[in-house]
Length: 289
Image 1 (cartoon, rainbow, N blue to C red):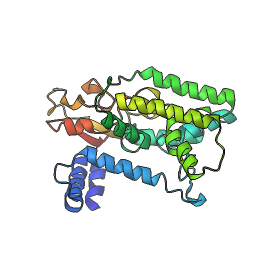
Image 2: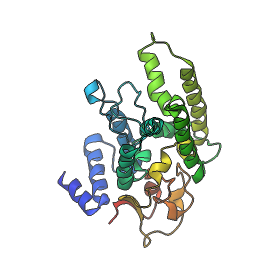
Image 3: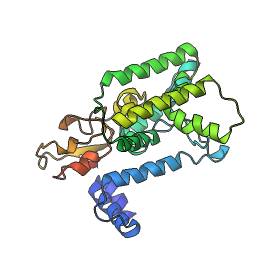
Image 4: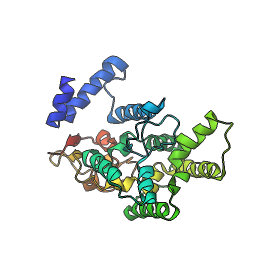
């Protein structure tokens, strides 16, 4: 624990990474070849467990989740960030609470949560690997997600309702379908079928494309992505080690094209695959000084 604290204070994430690798080797038998991606998968699983600890009303905190996760999930402990934002807009109130939470999450980590914690992001990763052969690699168009976010807020204002929640595929997977399984005696209306259809279409796209939702449609991605260039946690590229071979960019789930955009582009989810791919060990996760 002392080593972890020392590493955080000094911004030395190589120390933390080596410690995690030691734990994986000694306790889990994963071998020294363990990479950041394995650690990321473990954290994604832990994240899914943590956000579903709401076994009773006491554990349902109402705190805003730092990634897209529906408060309608049977065991959810926190509130969906876009759901909360829509509620404020629908009620005509100034969204100071969500704005403060988004600012804290963004300034600290940027889109780190998208790559390491979001269960719906992990779901896309899984389907992307199952699909193997990709129809095409996503090339995010920055303004599209901002237009979608604006559209979500306009719909909330016009309908005085959290309209996006009736379509959200994350809500489909983690709320609508689990509720139908747990409570089959309840009646389910038109929007349940809309949820199922939305999820089915996107599952097909995930198999062909990978992180299609993160690249083009997620309304929360531009919120956190706007902080990537100034957040405390960053991906540092050592210019003295980097040979600009571009190997690190191969396999990027967000199809980042330029070395200069690693960790800084609003599309980068900071998953760390580029760090694993770099043959020169020129990329590291660090704390901005």
